[in-house]
Amino acid sequence: MQEEREDRDSKKEGLLDIICREDPCPQIPPVEGFSSLPFQDGMGERHGTLREGSPVKIHQGFLVFPFTVIGPGCIGLISAQPQVPFRPSRLAVDPACASQVSIVDLRVGKNSFFISCGGAPGTLFPPLPIGLSEQDLARYEQLLSLKIDTCQISQYLSLSVENHSEREVNFRAMFWGLWII
Image (cartoon, rainbow, N blue to C red; front, side):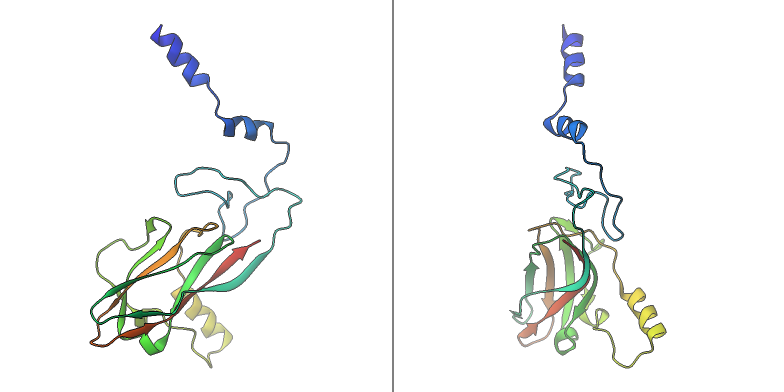
């Protein structure tokens, strides 16, 4: 009896399996900078895929974090919520506040991308310098680029920022990256 139930349970198909099996539309090949399932959450759940014939446009742009005042000795959680899939590639912290803060954590949704405790000085995330040759600029950009997950629609991209100065800090930052529509 138990073997019969286990056999029946192993043959059960979920609704997603039936939809995917019945789906006549082939998937488009993976887009560079995005997973082959651009609407995939951190648990591997599939929420939809881009299909052939769908208008796919990849843009390079930026996501700006809201202006935030962080008190002395405090940690601020600053979040942005993109409305399209966004693949962050480089964090830029305003030089006016970079020497007074540390980036304590970087999260896409619930996933942290810091593998140890402690913060990274804000000065490690400068904007691009002006006056470099194209070759030097490309090397500089490659050195500062991050390889982190795509932030899905309405998922939070969050920074935890510590103010280690004795005054309030007006924190401003942004992420350069790719977004797809």
